[in-house]
Amino acid sequence: MPPPMSEHGPMIDHMLAMLHLFMLALFVGWSTFFVYTLIRFRRRRNPKADHGGVKNHTSSHLEVGVIVVEAMLLLGFAFPLWAVRVNDFPESEDTVRVRVYGYQYGWLYQYPGPDGKFGRHDPFLVTSENPVGMDPEDPNSEDDIVESGVLNLPLERPAILYITSKDVIHNYAIPKMRIAQDANPSLFVPMWFTPVELGTVDVICGQLCGGGHANMANLLTIMPSEEWNAQYAPAPEAPTDA
Ligand code: CUA
Image 1 (cartoon, rainbow, N blue to C red):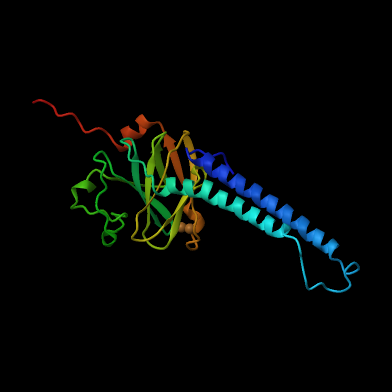
Image 2: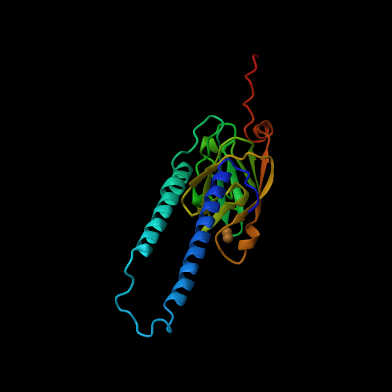
């Protein structure tokens, strides 16, 4: 795995590492047990099958142990991590929001512009000039910025991406941010993360979506906050006293 570049990334890696270690322990444990039974119950020593079976409770205790560890992983680590990702969405002033539209084959990005509000989206308004189907009559549409190919986000500010699709199901996946979300037509499903490193990382489509699936590779650039503000949220011009 490439090193994580989001705030929550190390937690995901920690969870994965624990799962793998536990699976390794299970693999070694059950393999050893299997080999032990092959030897212990070999035909030469047990010419007649014993229908009574095992008399002691060692295997039951082992099973209970496995259940306890699995419950700990689920309740102690996986659930809390999941809860933060899906329930505790950032609401701070500096949070940035971008709509992400998947299509066969690429991604489009809609930034809300200085007013911080997205223009109304209507799939029936989609044309080649209006690829995200923005409603031109909605005043919130006026300053919206639509781009493709590269998503730009500011450093160390929570970002909420609203993932949707214009056709089939895609998946907006940013491996280095340790996050991914299915893109479903007619739904804007939010996912959030906080980038903690400057740089450019790969974005891929994580759902087999057709012949051009592999062409859905995009880039995500993390830039300094001031630079991002100047580009995507320029402060409205100060009123001049005339
Ligand atoms: Cu879109 Cu695969």
